[in-house]
Length: 523
Image (cartoon, rainbow, N blue to C red; front, top):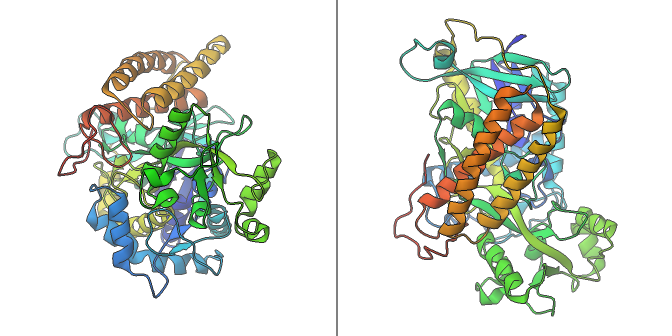
């Protein structure tokens, strides 16, 4: 089955929906999402969106804070571009009926209160309001349960072609019918989010498997800085919950990290204590857990009035109560968890990748905005800024993109074996689990060459095994996700091995110093 559209967006998070709304008045837009909306990382974002809206604040302060968190690896063009347009993006959200609380909050690494929020469900508020606008637009079609398999590469379709490599759409699996469809488009935009599910403990939704990064890499695009997986310092530690984030805003409102003895310990690691940048807090917690032998540390905000806690953090309060934890009376047990990927597909501020007609926005992209460590609440800003820039670029260059996206011959129909061995599906589950445990144990918060080499060796074997399954079994969503996380995990290890220093999120026991000049790790 062939589907044709003008703008194809793979993914359905905040970046994807914002881009769709900006394009749809002039172009036909198709959104592919492998699950049901609102499944995405951005819909789960609790803290807020950073923007200079207070007269006491300034662009320069926000820029300086971002550069400081980025540990010498930020792309200054991206930093200035995204931060200086932030107030306009906030006004745009308000036009789309997004609500924000009247007060600004402060999070780790910020010099001022500049984080706009909607209680502790900012991402859900933004995403739901954008989704409401998308559903009303006659020029936007959404296909749920459609899993993009691979990009349509002009030179693979027609090996005789010379000149630049261009992308003309995707092969996509309809998870309901099992049919593989061909979607052709002038502009293909990857907005598939991050890759937290590569790790055993993560705050990410279950589908955050690095799909866009793996697809772009297979098609020939560069990827960069995958070693910079940010570990959020505070994920709820409970046997029945492995991915519930405890927002940094709690620490912004005076929450203190303590050990099992009730001792605050972060001042030993940084002058800002519990409000230090995330990489420092995550390493501080990791060190405290290893030193004490305990399973977790605790986040204590019991000194604040109950009314304040419940009004500011209603979702977290009710969720903790489900697990028998009353955060107004007792500290919350927390551990670090894989949270946000600062690396991704190499892209400029407009989302342009190395391949003509292929764009990457949001967490899928690596623009250098975050450098070696993301400043809290800059991620939703990046989604909106990149959607804005990408839409303007595509519209301005539409004629050239249309010409280069043309294929001289139709893509071949999907051909793969039609058999499924149910006995082998359990092995796929085991390999998935092995990758995630291997990454957590060997490529975690603190790394060493020995651990990385072990991970690399095992991942090479796993990738070969996955290739066998992918080649000889009927295409299945579980195999596609396994294929993608195996590639992203392997590339992450390769990036980590190439960085002979400690910088930002990446901390190596073998290279504890930081080079005078920061450089990107590009594959």
